[in-house]
Image (cartoon, rainbow, N blue to C red; front, side, top):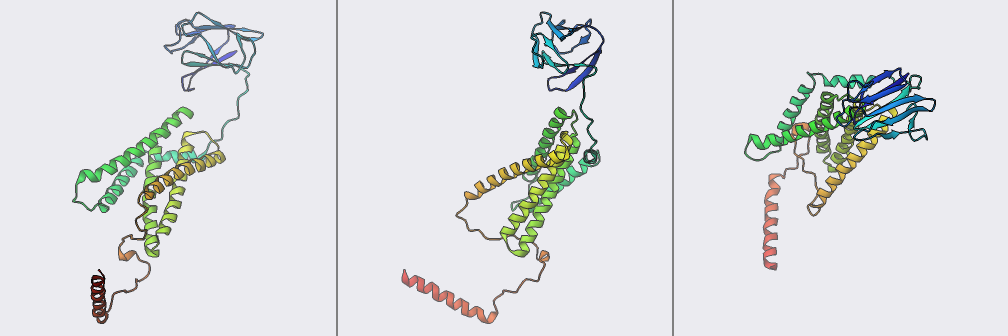
Length: 321
């Protein structure tokens, strides 16, 4: 018994054909034993003849010929079980019915739970929440006259960026697992954006109370890396068949690379303004202070003396000139 796997250009399995014949004709014509729909395959492309050495490959004067993708036998025109041929843009994997197969993969509960994020009522809620947060943030950071288009522009760019990231992960999943999970990837990266906004806000509140720019940088970047690690790990779980320990290391490596690139870009941007003084000037509502601020106002009885000293300093400076 001969089993022939027909796979597409990206290695995607199209069909498996069982043939109990000593000669197997393969091509696009309907009188073949294995019918290939690839337009780069001839009507009668090749013939496999079973003998004691394996399967003899006979090219039937095809237009594009027969190429060996994986060949374990030394015979020029023979293939053994597990060998692979390429005709046109189609791969043919040749097996005997007793060819050993690998152990079954254990069902990963994490994949099932993460895939639930692709529900049709979850990702739209996350999309609307992301747009609302971005609109509010863009409005709060704007000091110009209110105009809808300038505020909407960064929101649209962010949403488009999330969609592109989700599409890339969906493409990876399509190539590796033949499943896209595009809505789930959308939810993952919308959640990443929302959590990142919340983390940056928390970092700014902590730094506001400590009056420390360094605390904001360290705390904010640490949360940024952890969130990036979780998001990449979730997408890798949906898009690949890696085991949990390998997923962890791949996630850490990918997150570290992206985080390093992000830091390098920020350092390069900050270097252009290195002459400006570095001081903490974050503004927040006084209600976010955890302790009562000290009253540093100058008493009225000292104000006249400070003004006199200021006038004297100005006159002294004028005389020196």
